[in-house]
Amino acid sequence: MSQGFVAKLREELAATLEAAADFAERAPVQRYEAAVADGEVAAAVSGGGGLLEVRISTAARRQIDNLTLGDHVVAAIRAAESQAADARAEMLDGLRISGIRISDVLANPQQMLARIERSRSKP
Amino acid sequence: MNETGSAVSGGLAGFQRALQEAERVAFTEQSVRRVRQEVDDLVSQIDKARNATYEGADEARLVVARVTADGELLDVHLTPHAIRDLDAAALGLACVAAVVSARLRAGTAIAECVAETIAGAGNGGRPAGCEPSPPTYDPAGALQAVREAARRMR
Image 1 (cartoon, chains in turn orange, green):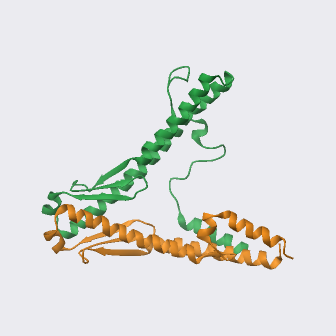
Image 2: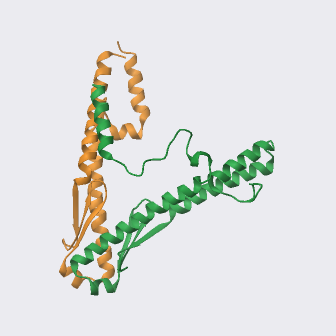
């Protein structure tokens, strides 16, 4: 395995660890919001997935029946959670080791091992 | 569990006893069947908890939420009383309380299921040398350790 490859791999691994720590530190205080029903019902979740807030407008409370309002609350919470999930996915996609995205490494570790094996044959 | 330790299924401990019994009698057909039954019971016990839905409500039970074992939100039911008795802000707070309560119930149920499953197994069901987790978790310490690992790698 070439020394340059190993040094690059170490640097990328170190950067990945730091980026993951940065994200984990920010996640609990990060806020993701989504609104449905023309903004009458909204929800906010943290980066860690905790439900922070559900806002229902006075008009929605008066005009929307209880069952539909429940559906709107679910839709708003799911939309906010989806934003938080997208942010996590984006963070993972941005992290690369040896040119391979971390999300792909996690999905298929053999791919990473194969690349390391190939590098062994290089001087 | 009866005195011979082989008649009633009992989580991981039951499986261990069935396995020991099977070894003792040189894996007779009946003893192997018993081991298989214990494994099926274990899987079914965990599946039951994993496939169940969990309900939570605000303190006055005006809003009820249901979630999966993973905490995925299935539905939120606002009772007619909730609409009548709560103003918009309180309604929002009740929704949060219901969802948080449902997720807490789901988490607790899964933890209890795992605890019941491993109850009575050797070393509290833990692999040798594996001590129970501390009751509190400090993410700051863990993140510091990750940063230190990154520093050493460079």
